[in-house]
Image (cartoon, rainbow, N blue to C red; front, side, top):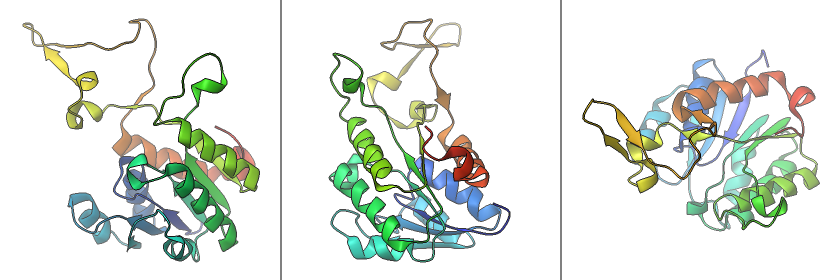
Length: 214
């Protein structure tokens, strides 16, 4: 990927998408990015970056916006969220729009596993829809790669959930209480700084190396 490309991105103010947009813009690629609102610190930052065009609007039942988003795009990074509405419907519609565009050379989808297919476990509600969309993309025949993000370090500074609260100890250290065995390795990442460069490298390597891979 030595020449400048045009990358289509959705949910652009999310950590994964914003990370990619920052590095893609910095190295000269063009970005066509969907946002739900032009207000907010991240949206305003992205709008100020060179070669970045923002398209405001919801994704659910918005085929015209999707078709516009993919116009002239060579690459796509898609991270759907449950907050946008029916995640499976949105994910399928985006894949259909990318297929219709006829110009997408590499489609990266941020996916997650569905534990229920591996044994007697219940599906994780926020993960299973992504796995359903992943399977649809595979069936559609797009030149696609599926990235599985780890746990964001940033969650400790942004999510007020008990899982991401640490207790300050008398010696100045922090103690984290979590439902994991202490010896279980966990895949941590800095979503704002790790994701973008990794995605850009996958795009650079291209579908010849990464097509169909997780």
